[in-house]
Image (cartoon, rainbow, N blue to C red):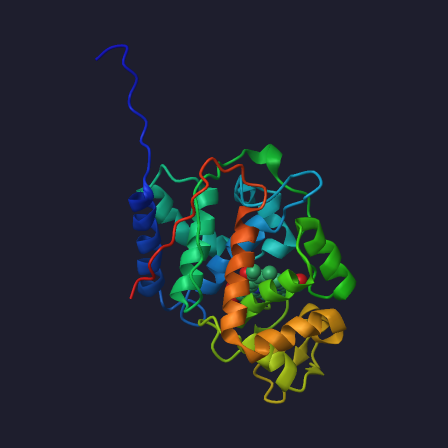
Length: 284
Ligand code: DDH
């Protein structure tokens, strides 16, 4: 009928459940990648999209999904994240109404839950920006640095010591790749399961400098596992270490704090209209 505008599609919770389930299905379907899952690299995509936030200027954060554009996609810290963005592209094609910024964070939630992590409440409301909203390079942490750098970078996002340590527990997942960051190896023996093993290993293993031509990193006695200088800063600094000990002792406490701080991370700087957060059921 002439003059009557086409009704805009307004997605409901059920529509986002469909996206969650589709991400979960693709995680199972494409189990040949890396250690057997795209889960870790999806988590890293959601974190790097969100971790550009600056409290003072209120720029950056997951809203905008500006990592789609150069120069942000080419920032050194984002090397390798094209694999995660490409993994999600068919889902964006199937559900064109979802913003990339909602999709990337919801995929991070799905990956964490499907890898045995805690429930992570999520809500929609992110809108994609254009290239002009790209953040400058240098907002994400540099793995060669120590405690001062961690407090400066995460303080800029609005996080305290406890939150920095809880967030770092994500390194139970995934690995370093020589062709991405230059570092090499996984932090735990179960890189596709979220556990508190990262904290347990930090306090129980003896960590030595790895002798190689690559960037300075630590290795355990078995030489199968690694820690970055920034990881070791969490046991060298007394205030950080308190939280490492706490999370090493009790996975439930880690899961509770991790869920809370991940919700905060994925929501930094997002102008939500919806107050209610949804809980998505993990797919068996
Ligand atoms: Fe991380 N991370 N991360 N990280 N990260 C790397 C991989 C993964 C740092 C450096 C690296 C967080 C914090 C820090 C994940 C999640 C999170 C790699 C290796 C480097 C280097 C990349 C590669 O070669 O492929 C540093 C430094 C910090 C810090 O200073 C605290 C946080 C907060 C998270 C989070 O998710 C909340 C995940 C997952 C991976 C594994 C990716 C993969 O492909 O596997």
